[in-house]
Length: 348
Image (cartoon, rainbow, N blue to C red):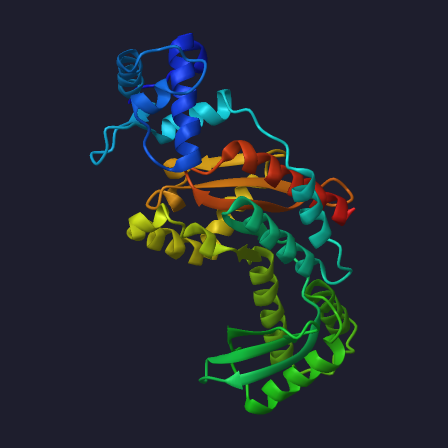
């Protein structure tokens, strides 16, 4: 495996040609020919000289020539070199900043503001907008158990926000239908209005103090049910994706199989959330280009993501975009960064 060159290893002429090829390709999505480059101001090179330079860049693995065109386009290695060493980011326009901040002013649930910001970011960037939402502690309202067999039951939980979730739980030995009803009534009456952690603490305290008024088998079932929900709740990602339709533009439509693959990948929200969760570990912007991330290696997509923080400075979520590798990094990277800063101010 050959190591890709650094910017400093390229000659001034090679850097100039490489930058123009990448910027032209990112703007049009079309491979760039030497004649196109020769017409751009400030280069003062003949098409033949440009072809030689482009050939050298291709041999270095920074450019590629699709078989359908004589023009060149940047490889993923070339895009990484450009983003890390040559890109000149442009700040979001005042109207773009205003659009993002305006959507965050609503006074409703934080999830509504996050969804609105994601939709705005999607519209401004012409990508799919994504946000990993802070994990919320579920507040319990009502419980029920539906027997499935002698060994298992379906536990039904209703949250204070109206969400309904189901879990299959193993029944303790000796559990009867009457005990299932007893357990459900206790959970609704004694644990309603509490978070999962608070419910577990109250159950343990009441059993310890002999105030639970529960059969031991029913108490064991309740403890199992709360443990299952706590474990799932801690690991369950909450992901909002908006603007998938932006990914089907006139250029992408020429490669419908790649578009289909990307849309399939976007359906796997758990994998995307895992990817974004990795971005939570750092304090700054993360840019994944094409096959640098296994999830999007088939569709050749890029992810730009930035963490946002709460009032204590802790990273609580990640916001970003998913789009084709040829997206306008210089414009989109600052836009994602500004959205992350706006969400951080909202959380303060």
